[in-house]
Length: 368
Image (cartoon, rainbow, N blue to C red):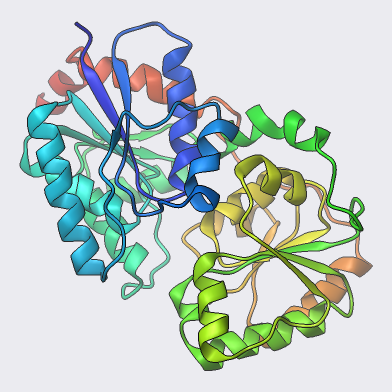
C-alpha cells in the first residue's frame, strides 16, 4: 500500500499552490497517495468550493468543517480536528501551504504527532511581526522538517535564520505553475459585459488592516473612487470586505464595479486582460508579476519583495493610488524581469524532493 501524503488546504489561496503538487504527483511516477484535507477555514462555495473544479482537483478526501471564531479558537479547534483525523488515518507526511490559522493548526498537530511536516511557500517575510500571517508563517517554518521556498533568495534567508541546508529546498513558485496551466482556458472566456482588454483595472481587498478599521477603509474607498476617474475598476469583493462595508455604513465608491467573489478561472480571466491591479493580496502580487501586469499593493510592506525587484509591483498608500494609476496609464509597461524558478516546474521539483524524503534519502542526509 502506498504511503499517504496529506495536502492541507485551509483557505482559498492555498488551493492553486497545492494544485501544482497534486497534478505533478498525478502525472507520476507513483510512489505515494496524495490526500486532500480541507480544514474548513474558507467553507462557502464562492470562496472555496468552485475552485476545486476550476483547478482540476477532486473534492477533499477529508473535510474537517472547522470555521469561524477568533484566531485562538479557530487554531485550537482546527488542531484538535487534525489530530483526530490523523489518529484514524495517519499520513507519512503532511504538506501545509501558506500562512493562515488553519495551516498553523495543521502544522502544530502534525509536528506534535511526529509526522513529517513540509511547508510549501516557506520563508516569506514582510517584517510586520504583529501581522497574523507573519506570526503564522514564522511559526510554521520554525517547526517544519522540510521547507519548500519559492526562490533562491528566500531559501537563502531560511538558511541564514538557522535552518539546515538539507531541510531547505528552492522549488519555485507553485502559484505560477497553476497560472500557466490554466491561462489558455482563462483567456478563452468572455469578459463581463462592458469590459474590454486593457480598459479596466482590478481591485482586491480583504486584509484586516485595510477593511476592519473604518478610517483606513474609508480612505481606501475614497482613493478607489478617485482612481476610477482615470480608469474603470472592477472589484470582486471578499465577504469580509463586503460585511465591513455594510457594518460601517459605507457605500461603494463611484466608478467601481463590484461583483461577487469569483472562481479561480473567472478571476484569472479578469486579471490577465486588465491594465493594472490594486490589491492587498500576496498571491495576486505574484499572479500579476507573472502576467507582466502592473500591481499597486495597498500595504506598507510585502512578504514578496521579489515582485518589486521584478519591476511589476509598488507599495502604495491610499492617497497615492490615483496618481499611481494615472502614471501607469501614461507609460508603456516594461516586461517583468525574469525570476529564476518561476518557470512552471515547481510541482515537478516538489514531487522529486518528496519522493527522496519518503524513500529516506533526504532523512539520511539531514541526519548526516
